[in-house]
Image 1 (cartoon, helix red, strand yellow):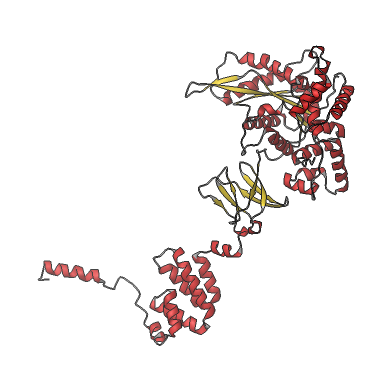
Image 2: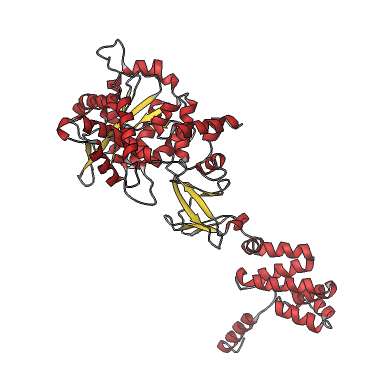
Length: 530
């Protein structure tokens, strides 16, 4: 059965682990990518001139075009589904009171997975897993390798000053595996935005980035089914690729995979919760300030079985080994696939806003990635268009360079545009357009067609005749396309010289107008003796 191409987010996880010199088997167990796939990517990497750091800086569509320039690879993914169930199957078979057989288990497996393995292959993989099972062991840790994260089961709260409502908060807890250095922070919920905010604050508190982040089962952090909001898996992978750490979630219902952070939660209960039980807080920031103070005291408390504190051990052994933080903070990135409309714009439905792309892309299917501040549009995984994300009243964000020449001309129209264009053709035409926009009571947009018509007359009329017609139009103050067209058509230039000489007097204070004589007439009737 044809398989799907491995997501680029997982490939970046693999690259991060390869850079950290992890083995193929370890990477396969952590990422869920098959060993053969990892080996094939290693072969591709050896043939490339590009370093892993350069590949990690690429966006997902660009990285996909590097590794999959042709048709995507196909693989059978039935084993990936089965291997998640084998551990439970082995335990159920080993339980005497269940009275289970392999055939009964296979029937239940096929009911849930109709396209799964047949009975013989099912028994083979079940037997292989049972023979490969081994007892647990104490694993050694290395500095700056793993950060274990979890949410505490018990909550904290504060009182809203305006409403008197008690606001319940979730408590995010994290600790470094090697030194047990702790971090805790209250957030409003376990939703994706709060989880990312808490994890970002934790990394900033540590002053660096570990190789791996080990969270609880990711499915517990899914917010809601919404096409505009991706699941925690995608967001965590994007965040991991930004900070250059690997995400290695624990197994479902396997608390021993993160036993250290489970113990850390209990210590937070004793050394943070207990000491704040009689205090009342009135904001989330006030609550977090108290949590921070008590966590610092917890990290500075000498450990019972060791002659040092968690903070001393962290500062001396682990902090120097952390990778540096990136220059910019992480923003959640959303993805969509769209088709370019005939107006060479794509429509971002979440914002009800249009963003332009080159007109050559009309009709193409493009990939769109956007954050709170930016929008990226990809065509063929290579060409990129970037816009600032807009929330203003204007529903269009348009780059004039994306328009065809006709539309660019339309967008560039303005009085200065037409005046400068006319001056390049002939000085008198420039003077005519200046008078047209200066003296007309109509808005400039209504005069653009008149300008286009006069420019059309200039193109098809003999130069001398056209200049004389323009001079006559200025002298007679008949600045219209119709007047110039009639003059040229009838060659009515007999009064051209006299019209130029009979210029009107300039307006000044010494000229008596109708108002002056009306006032004089009114005074006369009131007092005839004047």
